[in-house]
Image (tube, rainbow, N blue to C red; front, side):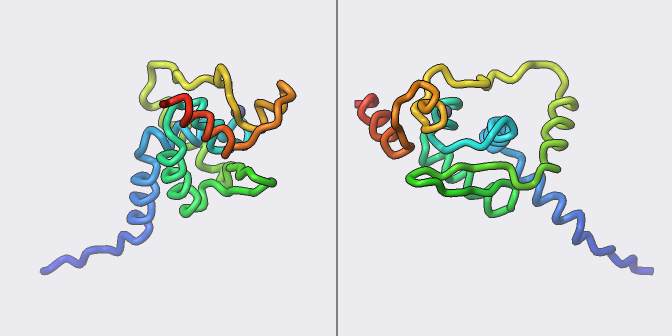
Length: 137
Ligand SMILES: [Zn+2]
């Protein structure tokens, strides 16, 4: 007798979600956003990855409705949309066990509007990007 395969539609969706999360930078982004909403230049200052690369990962997370964004003036802030995802972060961290994350809670110096508001300097991500690129040359 030929056995009939059951439909794995749900399992397929679960696998797709795991694939989406199976990415260290995306996980790092979610760890930053679980603290508070942040713009891409804050993530750049925290993780040391370029904005263009981070934006690609943010787009994937946003498309999956794991995060959302809001625009404020010149800046776009990202936040976690699906809080259930945080349980996955906690669980997977527990499963791998040892080791402490090296992601700083606050970047040493951050040009983002939120961090620079605390120092009284006017700033936005575009400015920060320019300064970052100039510093590169
Ligand atoms: Zn910042």
